Image (cartoon, rainbow, N blue to C red):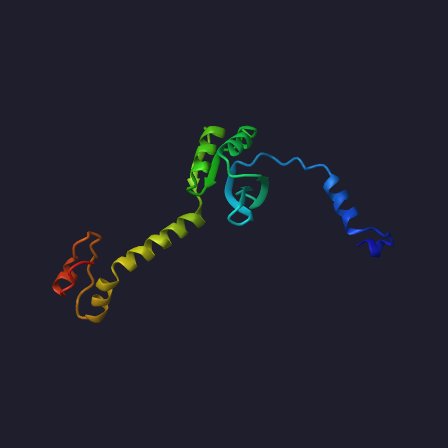
Length: 161
């Protein structure tokens, strides 16, 4: 852009000018979502806070500490809902910093956790499911999650699901 304007400016000068601009005053979001991000995976993590209504980042916190999240939330009393994953620091920070806010699980983590649970259930019952797949004349029945064999498995000679 500086070439178009005929002004010679380096990249670092442009970055300094942009970073010197004042932060815009944004309204306090009603619904805020939080998740971890890694600046160095396995070593250093922070927290990203997002306005769920606009789907835009609101702030980046330097760590995953409950006290940091609680302090950030306490400065913004208009927050009504905190959308979070199951990390204990999120629960504690939200409870301390925004006791008036309702805590909810976010959709992505719900689907992710449900998918993992379904994988574990299928893996646990794979012998049972193979027996059902090989016997198409057997009417499908609810599989038992108990450690002993479910009824269709017991009929087909499988000792445990």
